[in-house]
Image (cartoon, rainbow, N blue to C red):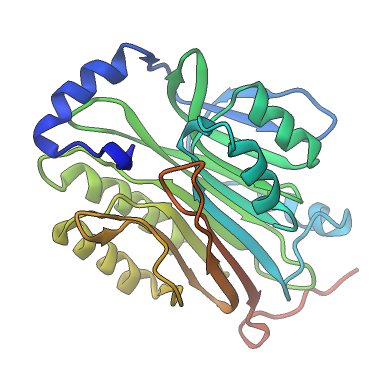
Length: 297
């Protein structure tokens, strides 16, 4: 997409081309758990159900609070021939995988199944007959998930975000992970701010550690100001990247990993040719002094 990036003035043409192979339906969330079939539901972003946390911990369905590895990548709808190879190597050893522009075709489905991963997709639309949107995969099942959907004001196709909450082993608080693909084509920032405000609303109601990551499409100063306000409001930190391999649009980096309540242990950005975005890999650990230990019965 960004290798042949269109200007805002050309968004109308993009709309015609995109809608010729895309269809928009009710918001659909795909849920997959190893050993089961894909479940499709109409997703409404209402976080509820705290009782499942203790069940998850007792069943060892929790992340290691001392080492949480995460990959963030806009995979460009898995289109490149080398995408399978890169996906397989990049996701090895990752606890959480955040994909934007994930196209759930047979190829991606099989790769995720082979790795025995739990995953959820918040579908934006159907592209060539397959659901596409933001996909979050993990080694352990999320306690709960919900989807946020915001319509692009120019091309009228939705952009989505996915909120996932995970139990942390030995800790009384959970990890919230938000995977977002930001509104792209707009004449102003109203829809973009609306989408980010939804993220802020959910994080404000969470009292444990948080990761907010994805392709934010913050390609101008006005959008950067909205992202900076989000960081300040939610007391989020940005990963301090040692290299500059993240892609830029109009001189602005658009892929980010923000966090709070965590300590950054490792980070790197990997150059690939299988997408127009370079994936980001990070490793965190929870800050034990902030969160009380779970008292086991």
